Length: 83
Image (cartoon, rainbow, N blue to C red; front, side, top):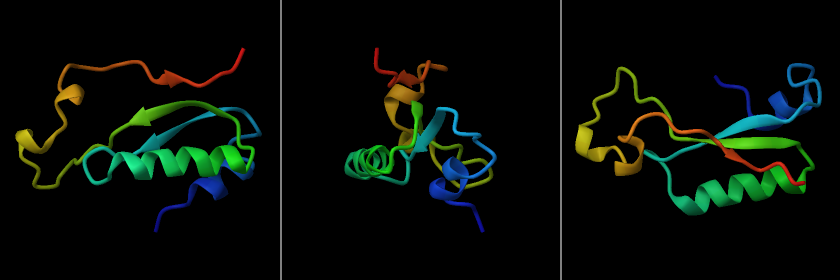
């Protein structure tokens, strides 16, 4: 069982600080990622950025199933901090 984002972002672990939140690339669709971010923003959670993708470690995933933009090496997260 994994803790949900509400549990993590509203509990003592985050201490109310902005956090990077993950969205799925391999096992999800863009609409799900947008809905997740919109939900978190509607709840007022401070979001520092978005981590794109998940690690399919130990799972049977062919390289061609991995989105092409994740094969180009590590990238910085998208900074959502408003100035």
